[in-house]
Image 1: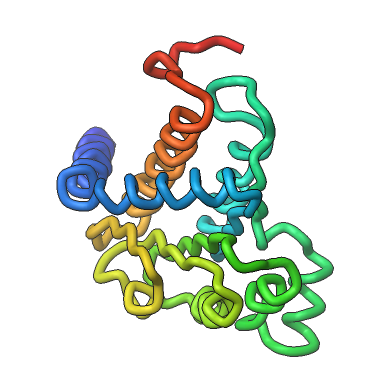
Image 2 (image 1 turned 90 degrees about the vertical axis):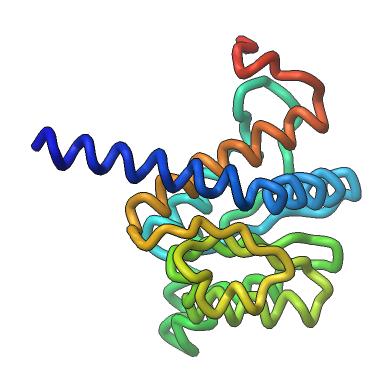
Length: 198
């Protein structure tokens, strides 16, 4: 057990360090996009499957409610949460359409769609990107490994170049938290290294 724990910790840290060293500029670009999006009165939509669906909900909650400080709610929507929409679209059309139909119904030009996919090959996220491009919605993927198909579809790619799904997901959560933190810094001022109390 000690060996497994130690190796897992080292690999998790390495995944985050690799992203920081080689891909942090893409995160800074996303921060710029999200800040501009919110300032313009637009919204961030987020989607993914499985653990990435949980991440989508988590990230939306951090923006709508709060991250480290009490501040005005920010417009973020997880497209993973309405079971009636998800099951009706999946039943009547295809599971591949569950996010695309929501984009078609809810999105407007200037919004951002963030797709989260450890493999980069989630068909329903690919279709949501296709729908987004027709509307003028910016597309961003948070992915892992080689980046998969979505790395070639997105306008902006944030890739954790690990081959181990748990460590990709752990790095994704850290990146999502950093996105919230940095956006809050830009919109509301210094968070004093995260030590601000509500």
